[in-house]
Picture 1 (tube, rainbow, N blue to C red):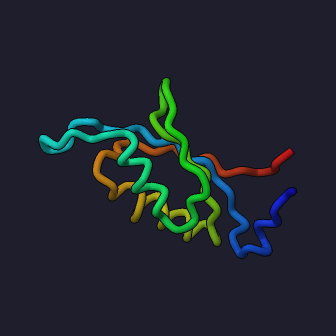
Picture 2: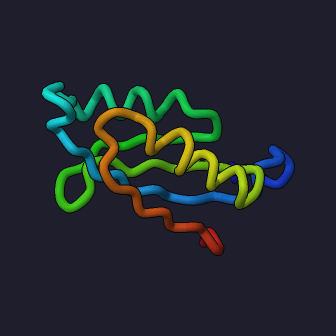
Length: 94
C-alpha cells in the first residue's frame, strides 16, 4: 500500500542523517535516548540506529520547506548529543 503524502498535507519527504557527539558537557549521551527524543518530533515517521559514518537516520514528512527547516534547525539540532545533520530531500520514490 502506498501513502499519498500530499493528502496527509505533508508532501515533502526527507531522510536526515544524524551524527552524535557522545560527550556533551560531562553528560554520557546514549544513542537510543537520542533516537527516542527524535521520534517525538512531529513529522518524524521512522528513526533507525546505524553503524558506520552516521549514527541515526530518520525519515521525515514535512508540510513544506519551511516546516522541514524548523524540524532540522529548531527541533532536531536542539537535542542534546545531536552534533551534525545531513538532510536529503526525496525527489521520487520508485
